[in-house]
Amino acid sequence: SQTIHQWPATLVQPVGSPLSLECTVEGTSNPNLYWYRQAAGRGLQLLFYSVGIGQISSEVPQNLSASRPQDRQFILSSKKLLLSDSGFYLCAWRAGGPVNEQFFGPGTRLTVL
Amino acid sequence: QQQVKQSPQSLIVQKGGISIINCAYENTAFDYFPWYQQFPGKGPALLIAIRPDVSEKKEGRFTISFNKSAKQFSLHIMDSQPGDSATYFCAASIENYGGSQGNLIFGKGTKLSVKP
Image (cartoon, rainbow over all chains, first blue to last red; front, side, top):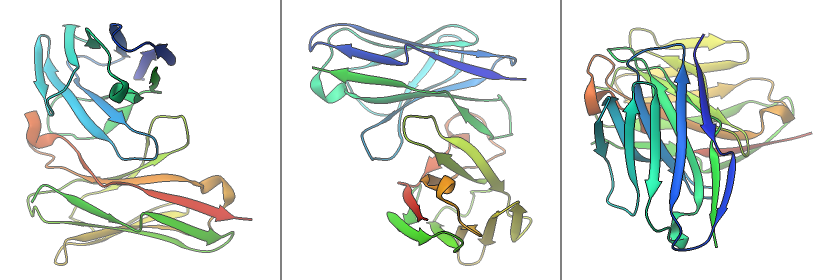
């Protein structure tokens, strides 16, 4: 069966510090991978998605970047965090191809102080 | 045309009652409509999904009703329980395409509170 992991679970970082959040998926190959951000009590904002290694599409301009160095690894980064980067970051995957069932990870709660 | 509009924003239901959440879409090419359930501090979990070849799908106390002509679909939670208290998201996508066209478009969510 497939499993998606995210770490860390929580993170408190000062403004201006770098960021690296990691997501890995087990039990599938060549998945589509997604990063979402969810502000407190708000909806899901798609940040990045990837259909393959090294292929990253950005949905919104921002202070963040994403990379996919391996088939089942997706990394969200920032060189300098802003207060507005605080939120709940969710990684998700779906199988490549026509079936659109999408599954979310447990999330990372990021607080920028 | 890519939006999915969800209502209400919040909903309070008594234990044992029926919770109804509605979503509307514009893009007639959408052919996959899932619902997600999210508890505080957790990632959303796929609850139930429907494709437009049927008008209703039921799984336990959860039912999706789909009206293709009205471009609307809804989630009904029968015999609502306090444990159902969560945020619910509807979504839509075009299932037979890869790339961005297959990406889910989410509604803004409904916070459901079931009172004991």
